[in-house]
Image (cartoon, rainbow, N blue to C red; front, side, top):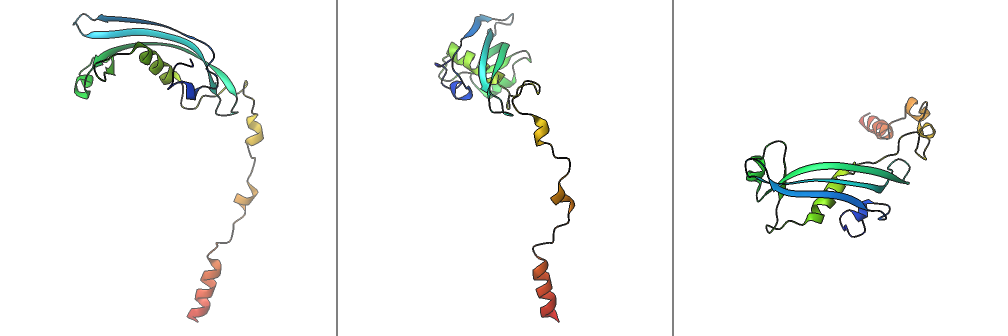
Length: 149
């Protein structure tokens, strides 16, 4: 995992390995495609307790290389577009992309497994919210009334 420069900053540890398969062929309409799977156990940061947690990834994908957005829009629904830069395809970039896409925006342990007790952060009532605070402009309002008189 340490060789995957875009993925590494998203992980709490780059230890471990990813297993993947890639198949390059053409579909029945002679459209080029890349089919693959990737499996890994990533170590990510739980956004609730900020501790490291394992995230199992088991993803399958089917891509079709395209050179522009117009071509991507014409792809059948079962394909994801693979935008080619310089008409080159780097297999490890495909694997890294799929691993990055598999990480949720805010990974969290299951509530029972998390190091944070959520009950500690629930407030039964907010006394300050229930008491009406005087407006900071009340003094100005009083001054204005005094000057109008």
